[in-house]
Amino acid sequence: MDFLLMDWLGTPIWFWLSFLGLVIVLTAFDLGILHKEDKEMGIAESLKLSAFYISIALLFGIWVWYAKGADLGLKYYTGFFIEKALSIDNIFVISLIFSYFSIPRKYQYRALLWGIIAVIILRGIMIAAGAALVQEFYWLLYIFALFLVFTGVKMLFAKESEVDISANPVVRFISSKMRVTKQLHGEKFLVKITDEKTGKLVRAATPLFLALVLINIADLVFAVDSVPAIFAITTDTFIVYSSNIMAILGLRALYFALSAMIHRFHYLKYALALVLIFIGSKIFVADFLLDGGKFPPLASLAVTFGLIAGGIFWSLWKTRHVPAIAE
Image (tube, rainbow, N blue to C red; front, top):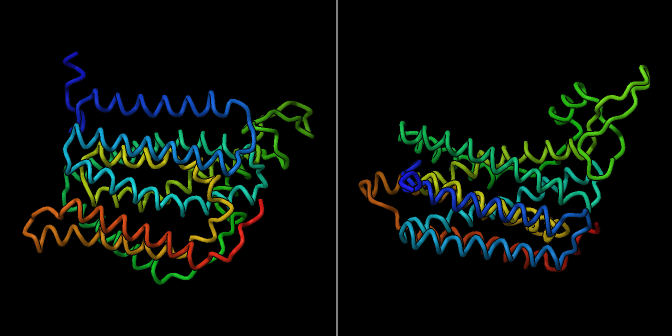
């Protein structure tokens, strides 16, 4: 039992195991019970499931608040809201990927679920590496902060451009190294087909597999923004990882709830840009203007939530007459 009380990355092992147990239970429940059979998820169901995941994340934050203190509790919520907002941009890219490969909605959920499982592992590796580097080289936080400010400014002024998935180097690489079927084979990522030249059975990837790979690549790209953003809020590894994962767990349900109206969140991009600039700037404010003092976590949460909520409501108001995209 003493082993469970030992600290790992600044947090007792039992705390880590409790969190990972919750993630495993939610994922198993989702995959094994809610979506044991592939079916198309309706908007009403996805909204309920999304609300369920958000509720779990908020309740988990209360536990963090109680167990680790108000300061880290506020930072958990700040990180959660930032990651949740950034995931809306991720949804737009995922929608493009599924559309390009003509993946029916009833197969999209399973692809997203396995993608999330991969993300949980990849984010863990990225965050663990980042935590080790920040602990050893504190000045890296200033690099993260400058990167966030630069990214935010770039988002404010960058022109929107079309995403050409056919030109994606990952797609071309896989297509050159593996056989890829032109048709879907149900929920299967890999299938065996007959080689036209030899007549032997060979393994081939399906379009669903390519979509899965691109979704994970897209998440890694988005992680370049989200991971430094949460490290700029706190260097507590548990808070960084748990806030990220709790936001990501509900991504699948959120996707089905918002995919038909994602084009209406145009102005959220500017709100996210301001959030990144704010999060990056407050490190310099705390260390140089406040003489190393802490930027008030409650103020940080209020500004973050206010900007994100404002971006969402303004987007929906400005596009209130724009119809949803037909699936």
